[in-house]
Image (cartoon, rainbow, N blue to C red; front, side):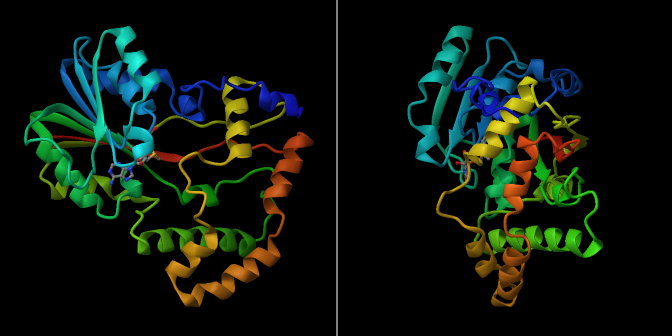
Length: 302
Ligand SMILES: C[S@@+](CC[C@H](N)C(=O)[O-])C[C@H]1O[C@@H](n2cnc3c(N)ncnc32)[C@H](O)[C@@H]1O
């Protein structure tokens, strides 16, 4: 792998992010068709971040629709020139403002379509957020939440882990489970909440609950030279843009409970340089994986 590949990856621009490769267009088209999104004239995207999902969903609703997006983080709800420009070019009305998913700043029955992507996994009380999203939804409107199970990735194989012992695999799963537990204990959400969404929708008396799985997998294999592989490499080099720089695994372990700290230190010693192995294998073009994940799309009607 040449370093140049990473630098020449998908453009640096605002939408040139790894998230642009999260979906297969044909799958989105089919989902939009099945949910009849075109009939909706008002949409709210909760926890919009820099607007990838907002932009995708906006392309499926009525051409003269009004789009609203909220986020609780000032980084995202303050002036977002590129997103505004994107919508002004398409002639779609767009409003971006501050909003907390657990206490949305809108009256009841405001929107035809309410949606979120990888928001609820970060919210301390996701049931309250779903209740709020339902409250601001008009009767007959559609709620669509897209949330993953993130623990399954600890079980999927790569060329580097294919010969791991059962104990090693269990160590990696245990490590991720403790991080998830710590994150939950810190009130920062449940990374695998996707599994629970249909039941949570049912608790809010939403009707026509339907569950789908994204058909997207970003397979990595040498020479890693298609657009989505390059964007993935870039993402791996840079780390997640959503991650707080100050939050370290040790903090999550500590929040999970004192009893896990010994495992933390043993794990660090046993698997030191694991990340370097991945980078080294990529450089030598010896890393490959099918890149499967579990991303649920759960929809319901008010
Ligand atoms: C992983 S990002 C996803 C962003 C965007 N939905 C996307 O898929 O590209 C999670 C977003 O949720 C926002 N967020 C977290 N908790 C929130 C809350 N309680 N209310 C509103 N937004 C929240 C974060 O600031 C961040 O922008």
